[in-house]
Length: 231
Image 1 (cartoon, rainbow, N blue to C red):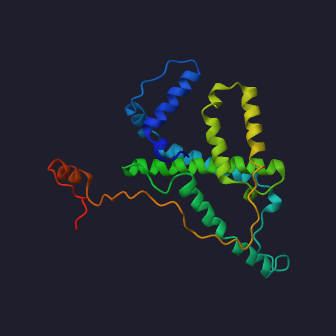
Image 2: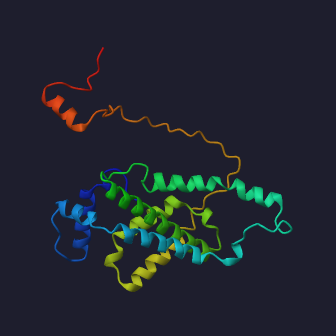
Image 3: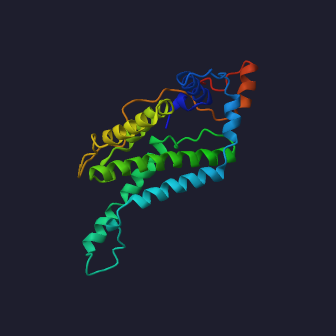
C-alpha cells in the first residue's frame, strides 16, 4: 500500500527501526540485506492460504437475505437481470483498485517466485481492506460500495506503525475509531457522470531504457552516451 520510494526494502527497514525504538528496544541495523533475505523466505502457500481465508471471512459476514441466483422468472424480471448486468463495471473498478491503489500496476520483484509472492501479498492487502470496509458498512447499515477504498487503505496504513505499541483496550478503541471514520467520506451517487480519462500533470521527460542495463553501463564507461539525442 506504499508507493514509489516507500516500497523499497530500505524504506521498510527504516519503518522497522522506528517501530523498535517506539517499543523501547534497540534499533536494528539499517542494512536491508537481512530484510530482503527474510522476505524471500515467505511461504507462497501460506500467503495464498491467508488470502483465501480473509476472502472466506468476508463472504461469511454477508447477510444471507442479500444472496440470490435470479433464476426465478416470476420473482425477478428482465429489468432486474439487466440492472445486475449493468453493474459489471464494478469489476473493472475493483481491478483498477488492485492495480493502481494497492500498487500492483508495476511489479518490483525480479524472479518468478518473488513476483508470485508480491502478487499474493497485494491480493492479501486488498482482501484485508475490503473486509474492514465490509465490517464498517454492516455496522452502519450502508453498502460497501458507498465507502471509499482509498480512504480505507490510508486508514489502515496509518495505524499499522502504532498498533504494536498499544494495549488491548487502546487497540479496541483504535479499531472502533477506524470503522467509524470509514463511513464519513461516502462515495457519491453520480449517475451520468462524464470525466476525461486523462491527467493534466505531465510526466518527467526521462528517456526509456531500451537495452540491457549492463550494456548501457558499458557504453557509458566507454565514454558513449547511448541515449544522447542525435540530430
